[in-house]
Image 1 (cartoon, helix red, strand yellow):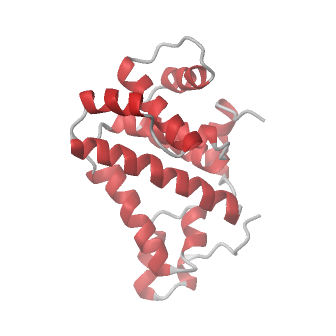
Image 2: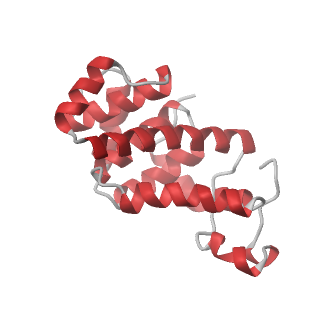
Length: 182
């Protein structure tokens, strides 16, 4: 159970009810601080709808963070969301294999992005060697967008864990299909 009550639209002032256009548990808790929820939504919106970084690779990076953090909420939500941006079930299986250091079917660009996400998540930064490879593949804007995406989702998983946000029943099938390791 979440550490703060889940709010519904009718519990918010009219000027903040738009914050629950997506009626998901994370937003239902964040709306205890409407201004923080709005700022949080702003960066999330940028990452998903404005960033010029390739959407499939972006989603793989987010999934990598969710997998490493063992975040049921983040993982389940982005397994679903990632399908809208071209990530396949085979890609998700390959991500799990790549994380374990096993051979997989991912393309080199995906493997590079996953390595960057693992390094930022585990080591707090991307290594010089990985950065050099990324810099050969992407311009400065895309490098910035990828860095911001990985950093933001590392923050998201910490918010989810601290506030103990529950996975909604609609997302449970994604956890059942691709369970997180113990």
